[in-house]
Structures are given as C-alpha cells and as structure tokens.
Image 1 (cartoon, rainbow, N blue to C red):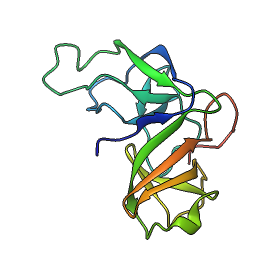
Image 2 (spheres, rainbow, N blue to C red; image 1 turned 135 degrees about the horizontal axis):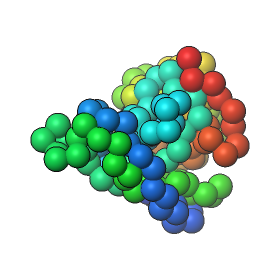
Image 3 (cartoon, rainbow, N blue to C red; image 1 turned 180 degrees about the horizontal axis):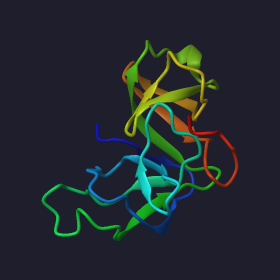
Image 4 (cartoon, rainbow, N blue to C red; image 1 turned 60 degrees about the vertical axis):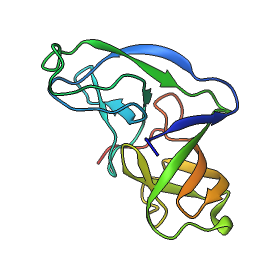
Length: 144
C-alpha cells in the first residue's frame, strides 16, 4: 500500500503549495507546512497537516532543489482515507479512537500523543480507514 489513498466521503480538493527543496516525497504522503512557506512530509512529531501529495518528488527531478508548487489533496470534513498500520496491533475495537502517525504514509496505533487520525473503519490488521483530524484549518496540534 502506498500512503494515504482516498477511500470515501467527499472528494478532496486540490490546492497548490511550494514543496520543500531537496526532499524526496511519494504520492500518498501526508504533508504539513514547514514554517518557511513550503510543505514537507509528515512524521511522528508533525502537528497540523495540509493534505496528501499527488506528485512524486525524486532526487533526479530537474526541480528537486527548488520550491516548485505541487498539487496537494486537501480533505473535507467527511473525506476518508485508507492507510497502512505501520506500528501497533490494530483491532476492530480501535474504530472511533484517535492515534498518531508512524511517518508520512503509515499510522501508529500504539501512540496517542498527537491524535492526528481518527479510525473510522477496519479493513484488516494492517489497513485502516481514517479521517485526518489534525488539519491546519481546524485542530491546532503543535509540531514538536
């Protein structure tokens, strides 16, 4: 599985943001504002997020070292995503609970410091359906 994939609810809207220079990113990576006007891949410590990358960024790209604008999928309130469970033992009992990220494209159901995603469905022990609740527009979750 490759990062966050739109699963259901309203289709996310596309917005354009400058990417951080010289950083590899994959389609499906959750991104957040880096504080200098660009987006970068989320991690276990990121707080409020912008959305999901739709364009891969490779070290071999001609604009790799630039802050070129890239398309980002910004979820609406009812948008849901399928995502891999990277850390922890995922069970159906976790539906309705909030958890953290492992990295830009997986969640950690053993961590509850940031509460970035809400589990809204169970696909398997390794895949969840989530809403991203720590979005820049509504959650105010600090990056640490």
